[in-house]
Length: 319
Image (cartoon, rainbow, N blue to C red; front, side, top):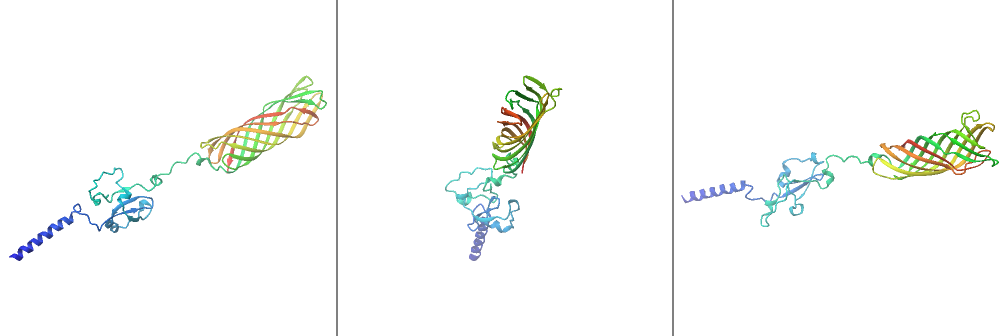
C-alpha cells in the first residue's frame, strides 16, 4: 500500500511539471537566445535561434539571404515600427523585454527607405556641361551711319543704312559649366538708304543714286561666361576680337559706281540668356554689338568708328 501511494505522488509531480513546461510565459529557456538577421538592403529582423532552421530564408524581398549576428538589446534598442519603446522596470528580467520575431526595424540608411527614385533635377536634365557646342543664330541688324571725309578731305560723306539681317555660326568648347571658348563667323547685310555728300542728299533707288549696301563678314575669337544656375534659364556675357571683310557699295551721279573691299579690325560684346528646351539643346536669345574702331575703305579718307547692333535668336547644341 505504501508503494502505491509513493507511485501516485510521483505521477502527479510529473504531470504538474509538464504543464509548466508547456506554458512559454512561465519560463524562458536560456538555450534559445534571440538573434538578429540583417538583409543586404539594411532591413533587420529579430528572431529566436530555434526559428532559424524552420525554413530557408532567401530574402527575396530584401535583396538576398541575411547574415545572422548575436542580438544585443542594450545596443540595438529595437522595437516594432510605429511604437514607442515602453519604459521597463529595472528589476524586470531582460528576457521579458526582448522583442518578438515580428520586430522589424527600418533599414540601416535612409537611402534604402526610398522605394522610388527621386525625380531628376534641373541640373541633371540640362545635358552635358563640358565639351563641344555648336551655336547658330539669325537676327535683325541695325547699322549706324558711316561718316567721314573723302580722300581729299574736302567732302564730308555720310552713308545711312536700312535695317538688315545677320547670320551667325559658332563652333566652341565648354571648358566647364561657366566658361566657353569659340570661333565665330557671321554674315551681315544692310541695304543703303541714302548718302549725304557735299551738302546734297541722295536716296537709294533715285535716278542720281543707284542701289548700294554694306556687307560685313567678321571672323572672331570669342569667350563666353555663363552663370551656372540650377534652372533651365542661364544668363551669359561674352566678347571677342578679330577681323572683318567689309564690302561697301554705292553708285551716285556724278561720282559713278563705287565698290570697296577691305579687311578691318573689329571687336564685339554679347549679352543674352539660354533656355534649356531638352538635354543638350538650348534656345539662345542675344544682343550683339560689333564695332570697327577705324574703318578703312578704298579711295576714301578717315571714317568714324562703325557700330552694328543685332538682336538675334538661335540654337546651341551641346554634345
